[in-house]
Every structure is written in C-alpha cells, then in structure tokens.
Image (cartoon, rainbow, N blue to C red; front, side, top):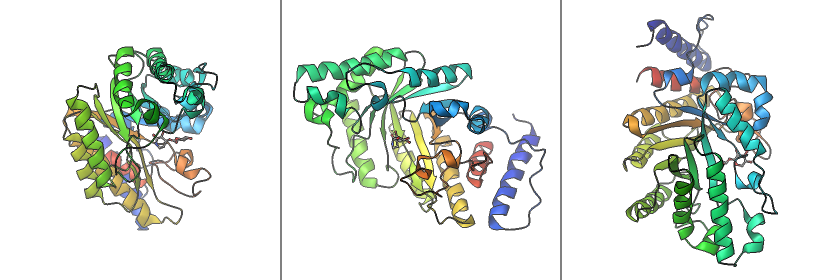
Length: 351
Ligand code: XIL
C-alpha cells in the first residue's frame, strides 16, 4: 500500500497539469511533491525505446533512469545495424544498450529479429538460392538470440507481417525466399536459441484498423494451432490523439482475449503540429485508456507498456522528415510530465 501522500501528489500533479492545459488558474502542483516514478506505480514493466547516443544525454537519462524499468533498442538491435553487407556482425551498439540495462537494473526487450524492412542488402547475394538463404536466415536469428540469451525478457521475433491495409500478408524478401514458413522458422529458431525468452508477433495499427487486427489474429490462431512457439502479442499502439479511447481499449482487450501476454510495445500518440491544450487532453485520455486496458488484463498477461521515446524531442515523429512540432510522448522536451504522463500515473494509482 503506497503512502497516501504519494496519491495526493500524483492527483495534485494531474489536476494542475490538466488545469494548466485548460487554462484555469490552478495553484501549481505542490513543488515539493515528488511525482512517483511510473516504474514504481506500475504493477508491470514500463519501458522506453533507447539508442546508444542517448546514454550520454543527461536530460534523457534523467527521465529514463527515473521512470522506466525496461528498454527496447530503437534501431540498434535490428538487422540493418547488426548484420553488415559482408555477413559479419556488428553488435557493439546493441551491447552498449544491454550493458546500460544491466548496469541500471533495467530489463531489456529485443527488437526485432525478422522485419520486412530489414536485411535486403546482406541477403541480396543469396536471393533465390534456396538452402544457402535459409541457412543464413537461421544463422542470423540463432546468432543474435544466443548472444542476448538470459539478458532479454523477450524478442519481437517477427515484426509487421500483415499487409498495410490488413488485406493479407506483407510481401518481403523473407516471404519470397522462404514462403510464409519464414514466420514459423523464425519462432522455432528463436526458441532454439533462447528458450526462456518470450517470443512476440508484433504489429501496428491493430487498434485503428479492425481489418488488420482480424488478419493479425487469424495469423496468430493459425500459428498457435500448428504449434508454432509464439508466446506473446505485441501491439505497437502508434496512435493519433483524435482516436477514440473506448475503441483503443476494446481493441487491446480483443488482442488479450487469446490469453497470451500482451506488450503495448511502441506507444506514441501523435498530436500533429497544430496541437493545443485540447489536443494534449485528448492525448492524455488516450494514454490513460491504454494503461487501463493493460490493467484490465490478468496480471500474467501484462508483459508491459513501452513508450516510443522518453521526451517529445526524442520521438521519431518529431525528427525530419516527420513533422517537427509533434508532441507524441509522456514528457515534454525538458523532461517535465505532460497531462499524458499524469493520466498514466492516475490510471496506475487508481488500480
Ligand atoms: C523506427 C525508429 O523509431 C527509427 O529510429 C528507425 O530509424 C526506424 O524504426 N515500427 C517499429 C519500429 O517496429 O522499429 C520503428 O521504429 C517504428 C515502426
């Protein structure tokens, strides 16, 4: 049972934050009120994506070290970084992030072993070769998952296998060379290399596109029916602030209905450039709804909530060529809590 003071501090902060956003004169949150860290409030891991260059950014560390107890490498644990065109490996950046996680007592989520958008260059010489392509595919998954065995809670084993509009499956060099079996093989190789790690099928727009969610769930059902060792559902949950909190909650509940652990794996809530206080409040309501959706699951299914950036400035949505000015995350550019963070904290506090 947490000290009642903390509850007041969290709720005071929320009222001030929301009030400030609505422009009402509010007594500022008690300056002495120390916001409870999200990782202390949450009964599940709260993660943030990370890149090795941020480890020396004191502003990023101030937020990441305090509020999060898991990291997901934003891009440095992907094939485009770890597999050189000549087939050799470059693990140093991913190793730095794994070392940071270990040094700061954080968990680590591996992202991502197989993705349609990665690996075309190093595998180009093997295109159409049959067994050599298949061997190189296995070698990459086993080499990578073995290297981080015992250090990752889980892997996004296959990322974004569904067609953009949800009508069927995405084309890729993996599918062209190995067929849809590339998914079965990836999960089998990941299980072989690190049996204890969770193995996720990870996808985006599952809340916004019911057709995509239906295709994703049909794929999941088929994999599970055939004994493919999928052990978790990853929903990236990249949202726009104008989406319906009720629709998002219902979609996450739909994904949880299969009884597998669910990872909200890449949460950001785009405000666009022309945001105002009202948009920040919409963003807060969505962030709270996502948190409530996770809390509504049985504890065993709550793999965690990962946000795709610590501060707004860290978001991929705020970097060129995206629209500068977007404010998609829980903390502002200075690392201060936004209404979205306060809504997550309030949902956790109310659990
Ligand atoms: C993005 C990262 O944020 C960028 O830094 C990188 O250049 C490209 O990938 N779905 C995913 C993530 O699974 O890996 C993507 O992250 C965003 C979409």
